Image 1 (cartoon, rainbow, N blue to C red):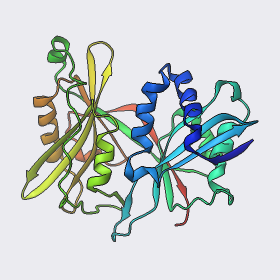
Image 2: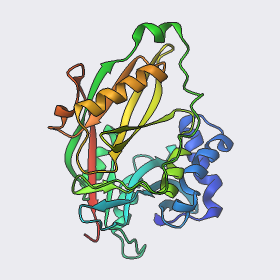
Image 3: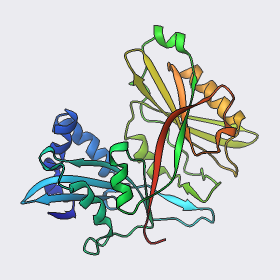
Length: 292
């Protein structure tokens, strides 16, 4: 078996793997595939690896360019793992492990400072065997939003459209060792990945601009969940309970959602209002060091 860089000529075969697994047509998944990898910020930077067995595409693994910077402003060649797939006829043969180990191969000449990932339970063990580290797991916290209204109103998961892009002059100040870089190009990329369910709330508090990115999803026929994602500002410091309360107010006023959730590193729950409670659910966070 050979692990090689993805080429355009392999597109139909790779799409067939995903279509077979998820019950989508190659055409419909092709739109998702192109949004993930063919945006100008990704096309020449993302890493796409393909497993070939006797001329047949057996598996696919990718690492999307995900820009981070350090506390002192240094920008990294950083990537986020995602969209792993192994063909049904090739499972149980170590294909996924070979794809993961390939990032250390001299023949592929991959150049990265570090990679991050949020693997599902089934793939976590393989990542650990291949040299990734699990420094912590994100803990999920949940609160009710407007459960009664959500039962009587259809969720608006398909009405949000792409979120409004950040202004070119907005610069997030680093509040930790690593911080995601906000740029109009990367923001445009993220907004087009799932434009039907993304939301952005922007507001000012004491002269500082805060931005909260959220995502809504279905939970059954009537229940919906809004996940609070990245919260950032144009000044130093982490979000406070006041900031999270303002985000909740905006979600309650603008979205037909049953409950709100957020995933945080251990020890960060002091930024949440008391109405949140911690669940048993965790999201594994993993890291692979490169040139650091």
